[in-house]
Amino acid sequence: MIPTPPTPTQSPAPPWSSWERWLQSPPGQYVLKWEQACFDQIVDNVFGFHAVQIGLPQIHSLRENRMPLHAILIHANDSSLLNTNSSWNYIEGESSELPFASESIDLIVLPHVLEFAADPHQILREVDRVLRPEGRLVISGFNPASLWGARQYISRLIGSPYLPRDGQFISLIRIKDWLQLLNFSLDRGHFGCYKLPLQGQGISRMDFLEPMGNRWWPIFGAIFVVSAIKRHQGIRLVGQIQTSLIPKIAPLSPATERGKLNKDPLQ
Image 1 (cartoon, rainbow, N blue to C red):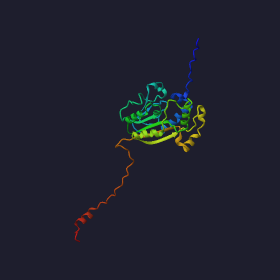
Image 2: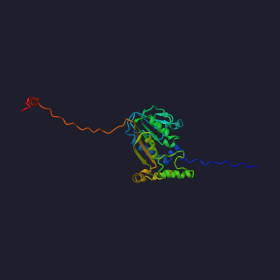
Image 3: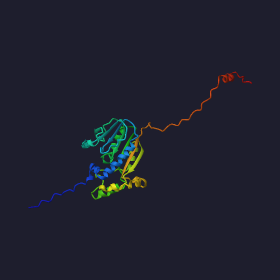
Image 4: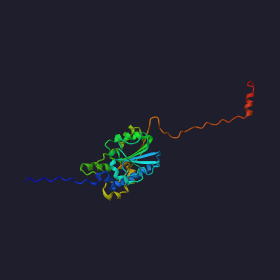
């Protein structure tokens, strides 16, 4: 009797291999907390009527924005996350085919959307289509040029990635090039999350690294958030126009004018 070979068993995937599970880990909660504070600062003074966040319902990027309508676009598979924030107006759809009319949205936020998308260029083209001229786009993502990015690269070689394994992290320089091709002008940007890429609660004991990283190596933060404004040919908001005041001419009295008219030019 030929013995049956044992069935190979696969080792269980680490909890951070899934994007949703990773967000529940201490590093994920650390990232969400920093991004929430950053989004609150960026969208506070963005005005208009319609603001949309695409994906990642675990964070409320429009919390401090004062537009009358806030909505979040989610995939049908993310319906289990609908109860995470009851204040949202939920819309099911695909980020590669946005269910909005052209030039109808004033603010769009993409939290970690491009790096987990099969075609990030198509998403940016759709954002360009639905965003109004002078509308604002806010993007967040992991920074490959950081300690977290270096650990992710090394960890993938040994089969145990630190960050979600299904993400293709895009550098900020490349995102800037893509935005410039679509005629977006960068407005502001932030780097953050300078703690060492540790697992578990050890990451919570490194708060002293935040001010040091922000001062000494700001571009090597694990997370970046960039804001851009859609420009339209022939439409560009300018600053306050400086006007020069024309000096007033003192009016002549009727007696003076009558005297000038009656004066003999030969005298």
